[in-house]
Length: 174
Image 1 (cartoon, rainbow, N blue to C red):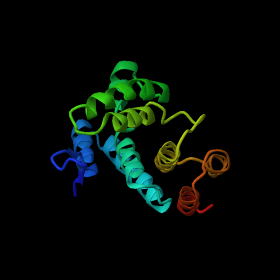
Image 2 (tube, rainbow, N blue to C red; image 1 turned 120 degrees about the vertical axis):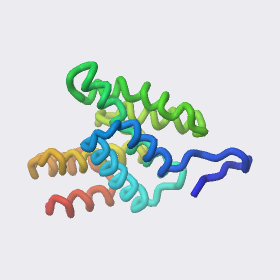
Image 3 (cartoon, rainbow, N blue to C red; image 1 turned 180 degrees about the vertical axis):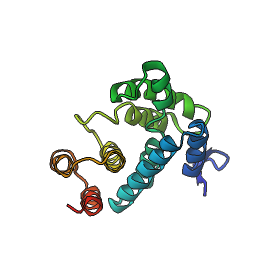
Image 4 (cartoon, rainbow, N blue to C red; image 1 turned 90 degrees about the vertical axis):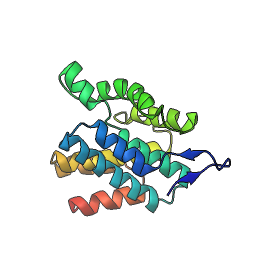
């Protein structure tokens, strides 16, 4: 389903189109593809359960899909995918990645900001940012077998959405 702007001739790229473009960009790296799908699924679920508006959900989903866009470059350039490198490189890469879409500039700006801050836990400035942080943490905790005490600390110090907290408690049986 395409989201149509006021001018019916202008179409916004759909989330499935962003997803398939990002999967192609991942160049067959199954770990990266699995991770982005996990984060996207958790982010979409939390966003819908928190009843965010359609525009915000679109931004959340697009940012979740593209949040680790810099990982291949970081592995090649720095030899690792450390968060600060992902943020620095990712905000530029996602802007280029979305530049040939018909997304509005303000949408691309926000997605770029979120990708460029998805490892920064201070100064979370919106529900879209909060949900991306929570969804990425849940996926990372699963993939990296985080200890229960670390998960509990994250819940008490960073998590804010009722839906995200319930999800993480249900997943990890806390």
